[in-house]
Length: 47
Image (cartoon, rainbow, N blue to C red; front, side):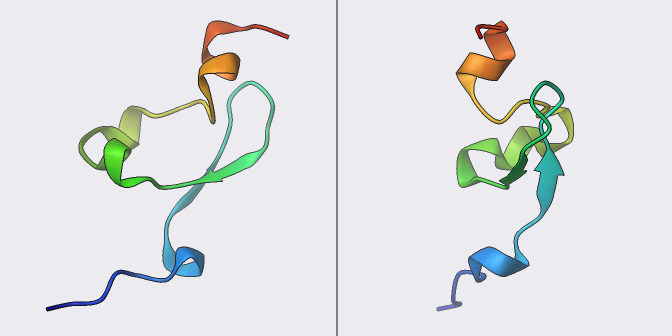
């Protein structure tokens, strides 16, 4: 059985709205290229 990668080794992107860095999540594995926002709050534009 293989080990999971360390969090420091996962890809990182900057949020398109707030600019904060966020890390890859398993739930985004299929769609990582299209993920632009760090959270639902940033995605919906709430302040």
